[in-house]
Image (cartoon, rainbow, N blue to C red; front, side, top):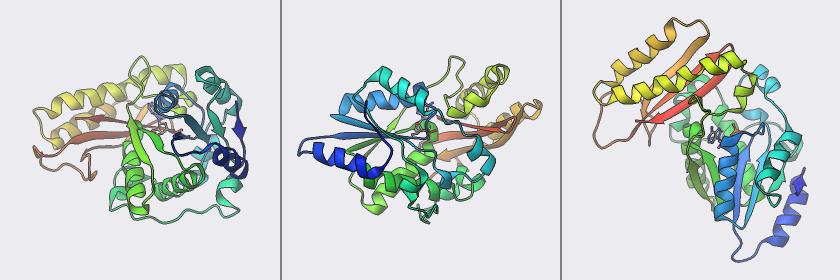
Length: 281
Ligand code: AMP
């Protein structure tokens, strides 16, 4: 399997294999791969002649230095998991300098307000970091199709906006959320949970599922009150936010409208480990 640690080598290889009808599928990740990431890779393999995965813990999208320091880095393990799918997948695992050329700073982006909601409110500068790294990775890989998980739905909408605003020639494909058996959305951060915390964290998906049911008959305000109540009495969990928002604008739902598609978004701390999830309503 080919692993590239810098863009120059990756480019030499990709440019030599590019032709008129070649297609490159691209799956950007921060590593510590799980079945969710692998489902994106499978989707890419199905629809492209070549698939590239990047494994890069991007410092500019972390607002919390402890979260960045503790983010799991498991490249050898990741490579084994990728190989188990196909040894034709191309791995790009750059250093920070390869991406940032000695200037580890974000570009500031205007994503028409998408960046000010939810994750943007609680993680200052996060989406500037995401926009910066995704733009750089797209410039390097020049993919035909790029695959992103709906687990990070706000990020998916922001990447679509980035592509539209920067006029990047790539199709952005959203992929469904892969879950553990108890419903907990798979995440690299789950590795930091104890077995008991992981078990108890099923409450996150159970609660948003119940919220989906309730939203059929109740107002957004009533559903928010229900969800807040679910987390109030358990000291293991700290609810950071629960919001019901319009899928297109990500603006909070004040009064339900028949013409809009809504989605619930949640962020919960389990003993300082931050987990997010989302469900279409
Ligand atoms: P990350 O490594 O967390 O930056 O994630 C890399 C990509 O995998 C992003 O597009 C995520 O949305 C996606 N992803 C993460 N977790 C899941 C999951 N449980 N199911 C599907 N996609 C996921």
